[in-house]
Structures are given as structure tokens and as C-alpha cells.
Length: 180
Image (cartoon, rainbow, N blue to C red; front, top):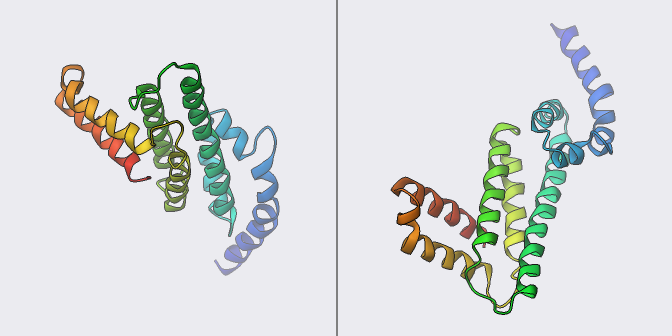
């Protein structure tokens, strides 16, 4: 048992600790590539392997956070482009809110399923969304846009959604408010 433990420690140090950084940044199979290609099952295996290292998860979480910010900035850019092409800007931007809600839902689920609900990845997601939602574009703040979305849901949501659907949609929007 003692020899097995020493052997596992030596193997971990030689194999995982020494190559973990290289594995994370490989162009076609590193963490970013797996995220870009939606290869969440492989990412989960990578996560479990890196959890055996001393610093692998911190580095992976940083890459994940940068990925989330990159995607979030794409949503911000789409909103900015819509504003620039529109004649009149409104506080109601359902395309933006729905895109951000779906984006948050997907990657919250990735954290649960792929990263086993790891607190470090939850923290990184929170910080990334704080960064994304702090970027107000146009005349209206993201807080005003989310408020208008909630108001619209409360006024017309019951017609389009059943009671549970309306409540779930409002709860998801409230989570976004926590990032402001």
C-alpha cells in the first residue's frame, strides 16, 4: 500500500504535473478547442484528470472564464450592431436578453455536468457574467433592459407561458440581476 501510494505520487508528478500546462493549450485538443467545439464529455474527462494535479483546475478555470467572456462579448457586439442599424433604440431588447439567458443556462449546466458543480468554475462563471453585464451598450443600461424584460414577462408572459414557465423565466432573469 505504501509503495503503491508512492508510485501513484511519482506518476502524477511525472506525467500529469509536467504536461498539464501543455495539454491545456494544445491547439486542436486543449481546453479552448474542446470548449469551442462543444466537446463537453471530453472536457469532463480532462477536468477529472486535471483534478489530480496541484494547479490544473485553476488554469482550466481561467481558460473557461476567458471563453465565457469571449462568447459574452459576442452577444454584446450583436446588441451594439442592432442598435447602430436601428433608427430608434428601445429599452426592450428581447433578442439580447433571451440570448444571454440561454447562454447562461447552457454554461451553468456545463458546470454541473462537466465540471461536477465545482465551486471554482461557478466563481469563474459569476465573475465572467459580472464582466459581461457591466458593459452597457447604448442609451439603456443592462439593468434597465433586464427590468423591461421582466415587466414584459409579467404583462404578457402568462398568455405565452404557463405559470411554471413564467416563474422559471423570471428566476433565470433574476440570476442575471445578481451579476449587475
